[in-house]
Image (cartoon, rainbow, N blue to C red; front, side, top):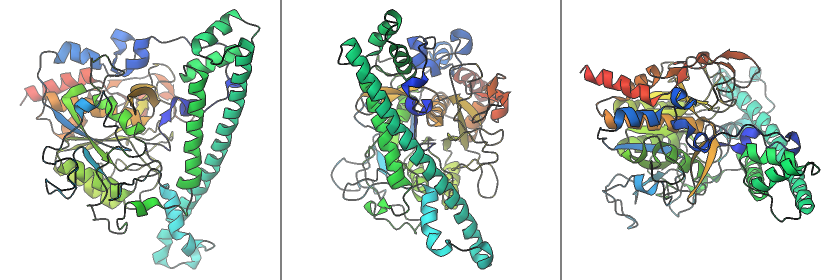
Length: 544
């Protein structure tokens, strides 16, 4: 489930694409513009918002200090290299000359000026959509095991059969669910479009915007559909009916791609890349296109980490221009392959990344060993890995989500920090309903609901997911490394965990109706806090 879930949770996905008719005419109390656009930077005491206290840290602790630039690799779907808020912070490989078709720095990657893509081919084509890992396992073994029982097989084949059975069950469940989701999205588009058209005729307009809907809902009570439409648009964040229709069509396309490609055992786009999938040690394949066919997710994550602060544009990153962002593309729509993840980590490490942000995950990892090896390589090179916990509402102490918090031998990965998602409401909704959790396997929570950041084409949008929470923490780690460059990867992880603000708010356990103490959902029991992390880093480094 790439992007830390099957899709990056957008405002539509988070609302489940409910029909307009599901909304009453009453909208929720509107948050301030500050809370909407910058809530992750705010402070609970000063602002009443459970953010990471980044503004407070800069204001009270960091103003007079001089940072050292830090290189952060974003392993993701791609990054829009032309985005105005990201261009100043993109890494530039000084040893490589762009566009000359030569491997100037002799690292095995031609023209890797901004990073590398392990999803591209030498002819410039790129994979946009991949299969899910369970689809691949099902496709690999169905000819061998379909119709067989475990007792009919040799002992050597029984372990493979067990994996096949699990993958097949997951594949069939996901396919059924996605087909149902596609039907709901299609029905929602038809129903909502019909409602929009009726309202436009009633009001004598050609476009419905939120201001018009608010006016109609409050001053024209006879227009019965105005209230539900206004509530729908407000809660989903749509400025107009055109925005809603566009988002619904995009969701339908994503769902259709999953049914026809990600959940199709006969679909295999890997020929585009041209590598030997069986050779897990092969590393020199791909191309230099770090943007790829759809860079929305990676662009959003990069902006959360390092979008230039205080420039008056759409969003501020946690670390701002003290970082440089390296783009490494290994995560398509669908599931990333273990080989690509391992190579992406090694590429980032070999080219100087000190922190790696990884907002992706999946249910199966057949070649986990090669990923473990890459993580151990990162540990030896003192590189911190920041991983999204996943968006399946699972207890990862009991359920699998990969890359996991443990190596195959059961030992915890010392240089990896796993991040769950929290909301801006210190209520029963503090834990994001989609977030994975785990007292042993999720280290900390961080803001991950309606995080406003850069998207492709010089645009900005709020997205939700542990995909957003992980780069918040990656940005924090970059700030700490920038001001305290002597800190090791393990120390960065320890500081972020130990300085997290504990919350004992009674919350809904993700995916259930059970109320639990928020502190029971992660190892730290709290939400990452940059202000407290800087104070703790100061104390630790002062002792040496």
